[in-house]
Length: 365
Image (cartoon, rainbow, N blue to C red; front, side):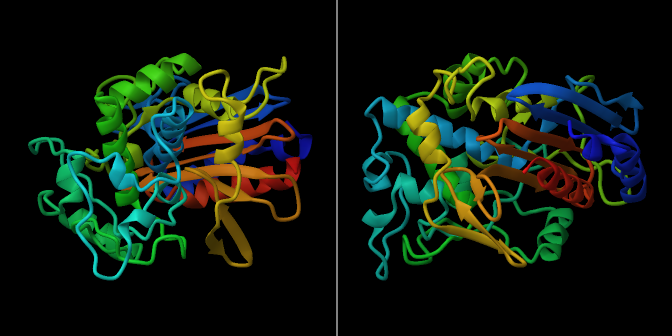
């Protein structure tokens, strides 16, 4: 860790956690392609006073999307999926409704992975755990139960619209439109191509071969599992996510760091992908497939299941995640072997991780 960045880091984190009422935080730093440091702070659950540990499971939310990209690339390598073929070629149980305006054959796995497929950008809402389980196809059809008032307010705050049936709402290939329904389509594609349950396929083919021992798509509870907290520190509902490819993965900080390191050459020259996917697949996921979002004067680019930043320095590959009560981030510089991962169980934690990650990027790039 650079001396400048590390000096007083714990104090800065604790101070911001207190000010923002974020109960818990786990942070991992990667240097020279190795796990260099893990720091944990605060509580996994305020009600039980259980402390965060290195093995506390957090919801990754949209960091689930890079794992979906690895799963798609696994099928590409096996010759079972063509990134540039119409995704409809692979869908058996659901297809987007016909369009009079757009050619559905232009909706491809590559465009879905890079959020350029023109699919509705409206978000799915989570379902309360005491409700009957709902599937990804229920979500694509717009057949989830009505959202809670908490979810309505959450989406209004972020100026997002709640879900409806997924459809091709914009010209495929022309613009970046962040789409959870697009990743729901990829989840259905993976299941229809393999005949496996999505979670079982990704766990067997990606998570466990990488050595991610505790990562799971089964919502955890009890000791060892963090719970989400709102902006004033109160416990929130831990919603269930019908689309696991978009937001369904839980992991501890060690597993997230393991995944982050697998996206770059290892300390002993181990290839990116670690033999789970090929270096060529990693290079494709980490290459620009069009423009992405813009934050101020910073223009991001769209990888496959990843976001890229190349301004004033080496390539930065990252993804963040968040919903009611959860926030997460991983960010790596593959060329230098540096990385940072953070997991938090507080609604206001964007204001915790954003300045820390920006400071880290400045220190290592």
